[in-house]
Image 1 (cartoon, rainbow over the protein chains, first blue to last red):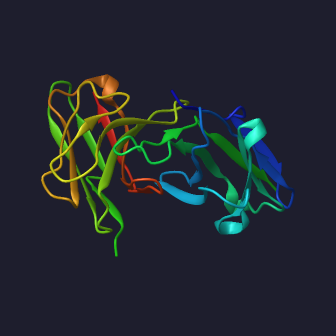
Image 2 (cartoon, one colour):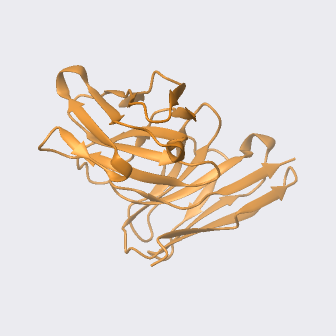
Length: 116
Length: 109
């Protein structure tokens, strides 16, 4: 069964500093990969996705992620964080088209705190 | 274009009561999903649907039932609520790039 690991439960970063959130997946083939963000009391919003092609993908709000097949990783990065980036971040994977089995598996999330 | 909407936003139930959560999407998606979110556990899939008239069990289906009578609506029912069902419930539509509703916060006392 596919699984997603986000090893960092909570990360604290100073405003203006760079950020990297880790995500590792376990699956027999390269799945589709996603990062979502959830602000307090809100639903989840898609930040970016990887289906195929260029392994460095750009998303909204200045985020990017790099797919590394050899490491089964899909880490999220941002060069300079803003106070508004404080939220919970979820990595998710789904098997490539499997005619009815297209279910997302989520990591347990990383809570990001920004300090002035 | 409202995306995915959920009603109600909040609800408090007593143990043994029943209720239905409604999810609606206006993106013409075939796939719809119900998740629950609990602290430290991420999102767990309860039930999903791959098209009108179809439903399937997810990771944590016990105690819940669903129906997809219309393509745009996906209903989640709790027949006899238990305190363990206290959670935040999210609906999503997709299939791959899933769009989420704002959530329903349910407390069962």
